Length: 167
Image (cartoon, rainbow, N blue to C red; front, side, top):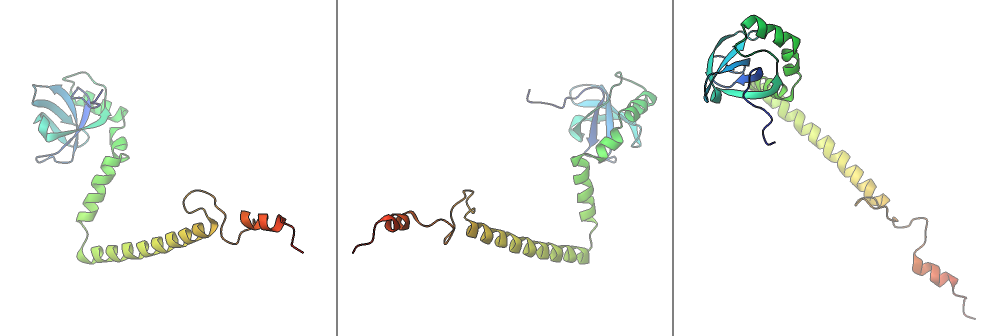
């Protein structure tokens, strides 16, 4: 199946537009092809209709009957631990990181740029040292090769040593 997230009763969604932007809601009922009835009891979003193009569907889904009351939705929300699961999701962490970056001052951005520069210099020097060591060991390209001046002599040198010396 190509789609994993369907517009269905109990599907948790993030509001992408309007006064409740960024808050989680649960779909309570499908009104028509473009509108749904939503309720966000734990995120202070009142029950109401919203257009589907104002929602981003998440992977979370709670079990409750369609047109369930706010009390039933709240109980299913708590039983499903939606708030905790959302806070641990990659999506929520990206949103939080974006918000924290937006709050940086000029000086904070300067300090961040300097720290990244220092980190990259340390990372580059460590990489170059490892690459140099791998080149010496003969493991630079993934195959163990004999380094120059290793333990085994060159095959041609062995053949010359086997020949008896001329008198």
